[in-house]
Every structure is written in C-alpha cells, then in structure tokens.
Image (cartoon, rainbow, N blue to C red; front, top):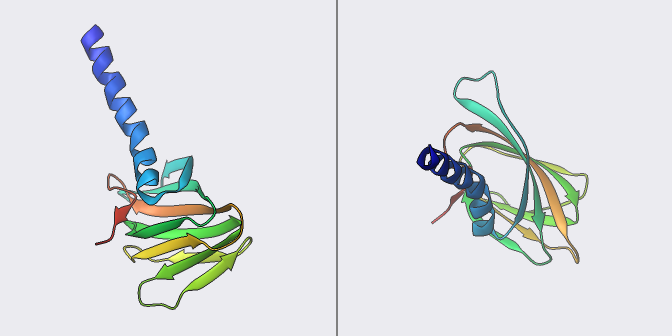
Length: 131
C-alpha cells in the first residue's frame, strides 16, 4: 500500500511540475487559472496568467491550438512568424492561430502580464520551443 501511495504521489508531482517547467523554459511567471474539457472531442480550454519581468524576452515557441491573449498590464511586443512586430498595451487583445511560431518581449519599463486562453488538443505539451 505504501509503494502505491508513493508512486501516486510521484505521478501527481510530475503533472504539477510540468507547467512550471514549461514556464521556466520561456522565463515567464505562470499561474494556471483553469482547465476544462470542451465540446470539441479531444480538446480542452486552458487559461493562464503569464507574467513577464522587466525586459524578459520569451523565446520563439508555438502551441498545439489557438491562443487568445489579453494584455493585463504593461507593454508586450509580439513577433509572429510572417507578420510585422506588434506592440500591445494593457487592455488590448491578440489571436494567435494554432501551431504558429511566435515570441513575446516585455518592452515596457515595469512588469507586464497577459491572460492567455488556449483551445488545444488534450495530451500534447502546451508549449513547444521553436528551432
């Protein structure tokens, strides 16, 4: 019984640590807000608050589904492959299609944050770093 309990604890710790590891890859501060199955089979909605310390440049990456961004505070520059750079301030929004490689940089003088909502395939990593 103790062995089964220990294995279960390790599995849960691994699942909880995964989002933190992904955030560390990007250098961002990440707070998981909610995750729910949706009516599209094999997909889920994931919502995060993503913080960007001053000057932080998150590297080029993609997601296995759509990303809807709402800038909560600060000024963030988004570089989406195939498009000119776009600078957004608090209160502005952005849609990033599934699989499109992009990067984000805090270009303001203080902390920046975005509310990121993803509609993604279940079971795939939320973040994939680009080559």
